[in-house]
Image (cartoon, rainbow, N blue to C red; front, side, top):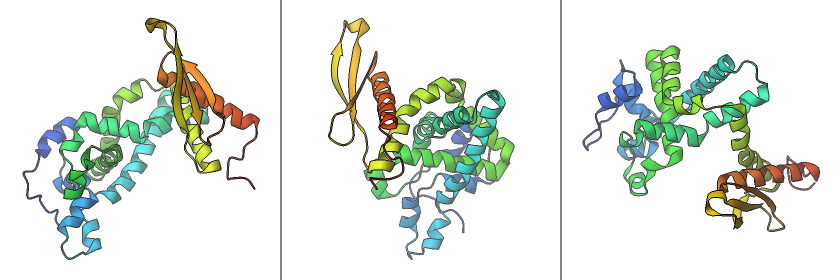
Amino acid sequence: MPIVKNSAASPDLAALEEKIGFCFQDRALLERALTHRSWANERVASGDDLAARRLHNEAFEFVGDSVLGLAIAAYLFQTHDDLTEGDLSRMKHGLVSTGTLARAANRLGLSDYLRVGRGEEKTGGRGKRAMLADAFEALLAAVYLDGGYHAAIEFVYRALEPELSVATPEAAVAADYKTLLQERVQAAFRLTPAYKMIDTEGPPHRRVFHVEVNWDGGSGVRGEGPTIKSAEMCAARHALEHLKETEQPADGIEQ
């Protein structure tokens, strides 16, 4: 089924091709990669869900996610072949995260090219991090399907160059404490950790922030640092250590 053109003025896809450094032989692949389910559903008046699926980008997201994982894994192995599997996994986790992909999508201006339904448009859907990250994966899939693996790899390395250039095991560990704590607490207690700044001290140029993290309403675990973010990371690290010391179950609520 051919891609249905939006009745509104469409953005110049040639400009997007220039931004990503890839010219499509099959422009329909690019158009589908930029099409959200909400746009497709609105244009399939018969309610034929199969027809709608042929228009939107969700299947492309699946392909793009796999290609991205392989591209990042290959890059990390080639540039950090002396690291452990754990270090590489933590670095990869950050590089393929929703936040990283959304930032890359913003640099490319993908929100200007997305086709979204009227309801999503009204609620600011095209600016949502999850939608932007999904669109990035779908765009990567389109590049892969049109130009092959090497074209896709080159696109990933260009699009994520700012993140790849500063990726280190130390940065990955620091950024991962909050993620690790959230995953641990959600798995064990079905709750989400909440961070609260409880105190600041020192002169403006040497400020120290004190933050508490809590998830069950009881006594929280505290951390400190020269920025609120670093204090939150410190609190998350201490909370993980506390959970390990008290041998809290990691795979479910109390037996």
